[in-house]
Each structure stands twice: as C-alpha cells, then as structure tokens.
Image (cartoon, rainbow, N blue to C red; front, side, top):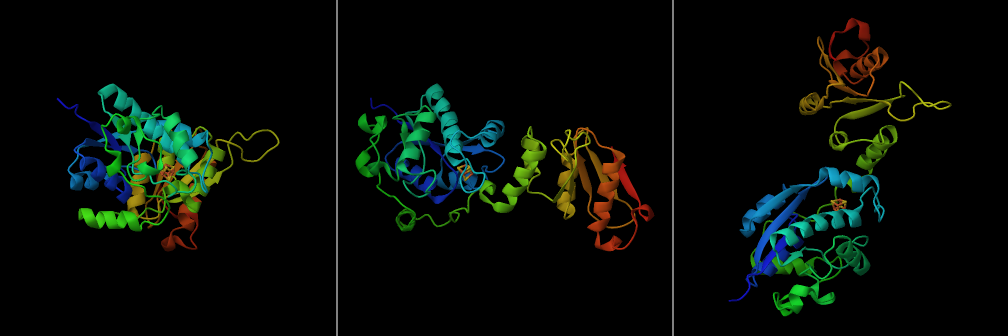
Length: 321
Ligand code: SF4
C-alpha cells in the first residue's frame, strides 16, 4: 500500500502560503496548516484561509520564545527591529519538532526565492533550514525547482515536476495561479509586521532602554496610547533616568482606556478622571511615588480638551493603587 504523505504547512493567510497548500493538496498530499502567534503576528488571516482551503489548522503560541529572539537575534535585524531570519528559523524549528514527533513527511512554506531581499535569498533560506534542524525536509513548493531537491522529492513522495520555479518580487505568477485556482479573496501583501514600522520600533527601543527585562505583556502595550517615561526613582550614579524608569501610558479613546485598565498588574497604578472627560492613565514601575502619580494627573489634564487651562488641584481623580 502506498505510504500516506502528510505535510505540515506554515500558513500565514497570505497568497503565497495559500498557494503552497494548494500545490501540495493537488498532488494528493494530506496537508495540515500551522500558524504561530507572537506579539506581532497571529492567526487572524490564517483562520479564514484554512477554512477556504478546507484544511485543518493548529495554532501555536510562541510569544515567549519569540521575545528571546527579538532581544538577541543571531542574524540581526532588518530595516526596523524585525529579526526575520531568526523569526523564520524559530517557527520552522517548532514546526520541525512537531513533524518529527507526529510523523509528518516534511514541512512546507510559501516562501518565494528573492521575494524578500533580507530573508529570502538563497543563503538565508539555507541558514533557516539548518537552524530549524530541517535539512532536506523543508519544501518551498513555489520556488522548489530553483532549489535543491528535498528528501520527499527524492523519495518520490512529492512530484517535483508539479512544483514551481517562481522567484523575485513580481507577484504576477502568484496572481495568475490564484486565478487558475479560482482564489479571489486573499489579503494584499502585508507591509510587514509592526517590527518594520518606524513609530512602533521607536517605542519598542524606548521600552528596551528603560526596561531591558521587558516581557510579552509590556510589548502588547507598545502600540497603544500615548507613552511617557519619567526618570528612574533610583537613577544610576552620575546619570539621569537610567533603566527601570516610570512608564505612564494614556488611553487615546474609550477602547484604549479599557485595554489599559485590564492590563493593570498588582504593582501598577491606574488613574481615572472623575469630574471631567479625559484620558485614563496606567502607571507602570516597580516603585511608584506620589510624584509619579502627580505627573500622571498633569498629563491627563494636558490631554483633556475639557480640562484645558484648569489646575490639577481643582479636578477630581480616582486612583487605584
Ligand atoms: S516581518 Fe515580522 S513576522 Fe515576518 S518574518 Fe520578519 S519578524 Fe517575523
């Protein structure tokens, strides 16, 4: 009896990974999709894609592992703080572990040779494969004919002739293939994750400077509200500020106020304006002084159009400490 071929395919929900699933399914290969959640990417696009493709998908949380990579990437950052090579290697390593444990024949991705200059040139693809412990077992169906044959191709589990030789940034071949498969609804190529965006990376660098041991919950708040850093209550000798300063985050609307409130941890302070409309404030630090609370109240007043020109002492606040 012919051996059942099972592939684990990384599915982001973008067109390339959708096509990778299609190309393999078309060969009669049983595909399971896998999607990884970090602070910067998750399953929101992959879920509808898996549904449309009719394949099961598992979701794996790698936020903690990803944070370690983000703080110290072996292969460095792209134009922003995006450690793309390390990020791919981490996801593929996790996929590889599942592949070996659960008896999948290989792992596949929608990567296209040369599509992303930093992380998808030949050398980078090779590095990622090696770092992930997947040498010979990582198939890129869209560019396979331009790459070395993999073990499943050599063993005849995958028909190399039916794989493709797409390369470069021109997406016309993928769009034509999508039309051939009748795939109409797919997301436009993303402008990269938040780690490639200047405003976000500036805030993230600020967080890393003031709090080098930042965690995944801190990162969740980076894109939210207005951020202010006060000098550390215990600044290092000879310098102002230093690490472990006090962070004040103001919500810019009702939704952000709610998120900040629910993000409050036991040592944090939360401040709500009582007799006027204004932003709510979350204060984060290992040690929060009355001075920091006063500063947060001043910021609330400064960013409240309704309290313009009024003194903090004339206004009421509720302080949850
Ligand atoms: S753009 Fe972001 S999510 Fe994508 S590979 Fe790079 S670091 Fe990872």
